[in-house]
Image (spheres, rainbow, N blue to C red):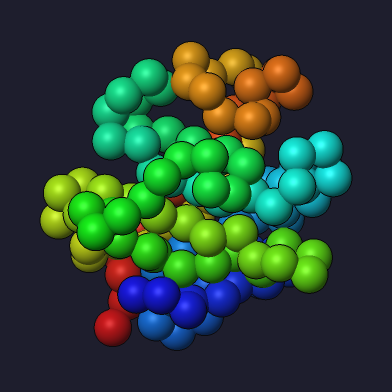
Length: 129
């Protein structure tokens, strides 16, 4: 799964990619990177804010053998934003393509966007062959 790269301007991933980011979410990620340094996502499995994508400074959330690297988001900076999900949750989502978006309102988790008055959400669709 590793290595899928999607540019912010595409909005949706190219063939075979599992993750993408909307332009609005990419812009927020660039601002957050300016404040917090390199970022990462871990797709929450029901803790805190349901199943929201949680954004952390890269390395603050420890990933390991029980996590799946879904791909990387190219937001137009020197470094991509990796997206992870627990292997157990991936069993449920393995047939989907995920797009990280942002909407008004505060989530209930520890994600970095919370003070901005917005929250990241995951939009999904069936993964095309």
